[in-house]
Image 1 (spheres, helix red, strand yellow):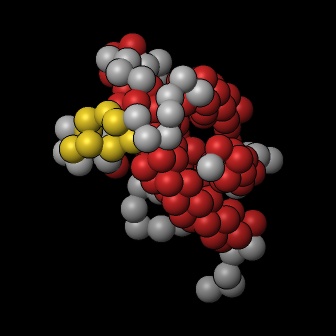
Image 2: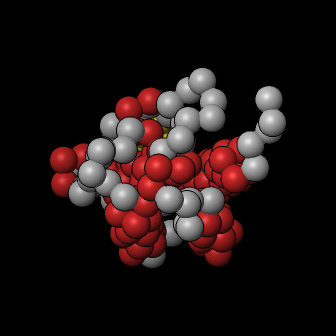
Length: 149
């Protein structure tokens, strides 16, 4: 499960790597979703699921934003693609360190879902990052090869 999650992490990063800062911020859909915003959102999810829920780290100590929802896609004006990649990779590394301390079936309590375990978090993160990497692929294609109309 760890290697599947790491593969999806890398694929999501690859959807923004090499894009200019302007292109990474381009909105090609009606929602707040941008390539760089997807990566920012994924960093928030890493912090919430692995640091806060699994590791028990208070949200204000998770380093970076931990607000879910549409605001998790927001990127500050001064943040670059490199900054957000580094933020995501730092959050992912911290997730790996925390997860290594737990058995797959050790139970934690989620405030809305009840009892969950590391296996659940891995599966949720694998699915979520795979979906977002697919979104990122489509956005990148729209940016690099816009339709003529």
